Amino acid sequence: MKHFAVWALLPAVLAALPARAALFDDDEARKRIDATNQRLNQIQRTLEERMTALENQLKSQGLVELFNQLEQIKSDVARLRGQVEVLTYEQEQQQKRQRDLYVDLDTRLRKLEGSAPGAVPAAGAPSGSLPPANSPGAPAAAGPAAAPAPTAAVAAEQRDYDAALDLFKAGKYPAAVTGFGLFVKTYPKSPLAPSAQNWLGNAQFAQKDYRAAISSQRQLVSAFPDSAKVPDALLTIASSQFELGDSAASRRTLEDLIKKYPLSEAAAKARQRLAIR
Image (tube, rainbow, N blue to C red; front, top):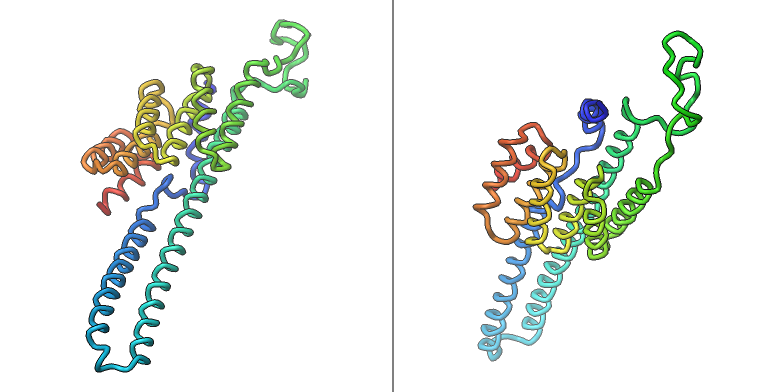
């Protein structure tokens, strides 16, 4: 019942959140950087050609003109290098914003799950929420405690999960990989296990360990096929395959994602990627 209520509220939560760009979806910035690098290489080749030509023309040209041409070439190269640095910085900032949005979404969803109808009431809930013990239809007294407090095991799970997530948010990806990897081994049956497995794959992707990211996300799909994290896991798998140079496998994964989860946000991003490839 709890899960049904959570899934019933999930579309409203997703609709209220800002649209998130695909995790690590930096194709446009990367294309701009590649284009600028190509222009830089062309300028460098032109520089060499012009230097050779200028050497051959030294006898017929003044040194002042030669100096001006060399300064112009230096200025062009410096400007292009500056453009590359700006695009690289913008790409890093875009990835940081995407990571923060993804973390915020995960946090809100977990809060929603904890407050959904049918969830176990927290200790200290108003006594007026239940009929008096002596009233008709009142349930039999089960004991002095109105609701059990969270167990030490549940508290430990949440603490370890939050610690690994904080490492990811701080960009400490190797430590985040260790933290989430330990979490899924220690708490394989935890409700947080699918999210932890997904973050493990994302942290590996952030380290450019694409093969490990594919393996981790496939474990999520296999172990938690009904999890809401599965579409995102497939999207990360497709991104990793693309980064490894296997465009055909990446396209198949995107098409499979769209077929199985056509209404998911990940499917919308998959369609965008297929449209530009």
